[in-house]
Length: 184
Image (cartoon, rainbow, N blue to C red; front, side):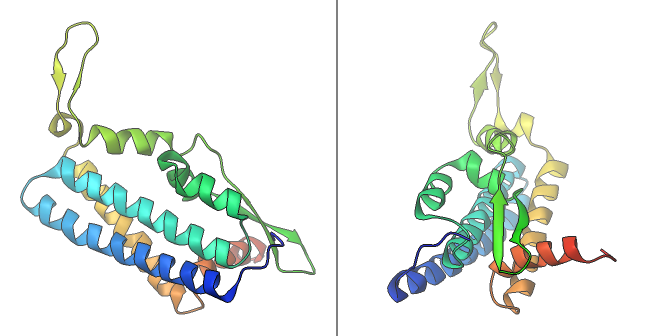
């Protein structure tokens, strides 16, 4: 656990940030479904991936509020697309068996493929040798968009479920509990 005392105002702001990011992720999901239903699969994929990025920001806010991240760690991830996707794949470990201490580790390269896929769903690129265009629609089909929307909705549902037990940080706590459960 990072030993930085946060002011009551900072704690409230982080709680509002978490809530706003989760609400925005839900809005991205609704809009992605609309685009998907009209056949705009690449744009639907882009919005679904953007929603997943918003959920990472919500988790960052929750983890900062709980004292599991320093301010420097928070901002270095919050401001970087690939690191936010990497944060979705973070690993969590107990830091000490007698205290509520968590160690959060991320692989900075883990989110790069998702960041690049998201960008390809929005922009036309060109082959360096032939100048042949490659459109977002040629890169993202119906199945890929559907899978991304489904993943976003699953993560929103998990986040909402765990919110019943104290907020998004409970997802981190639940992961630690499952890891420590001999049956799990």
